[in-house]
Image 1 (cartoon, rainbow, N blue to C red):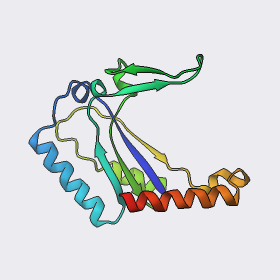
Image 2: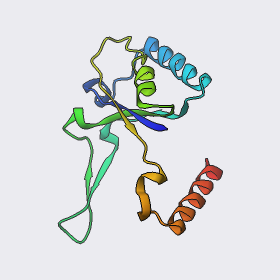
Image 3: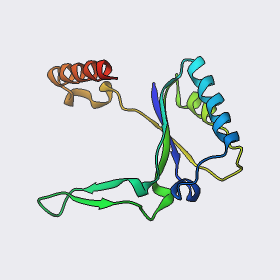
Length: 142
């Protein structure tokens, strides 16, 4: 099973404040542990929402673009990992080990990544084949 582990933004991350050297080092060690255990497929931190945009669909013929920053910090993502583990419980155990050397209150969300089987008969053999070809192409570009 693959899970997306979503680190929620904080006022510090949204203000552009960089983590301490100690926290960067601890996160590096944690990421190394994830890689050595063979569970980390990807992981990145994100710049603040001031450097982002949202595209809103609906209500008009054309989507509207809203430039950051965005007001609701608690609803924003500051970073993520993609983990491949056996269960949600295993993902939770890894996340409980995320360094918090700055003592700040953080919230991390864990969501299972949908697999082809989750779409049942709506994912026809043709659609599944097209999806697999796209994944192969993405892997080549990676």
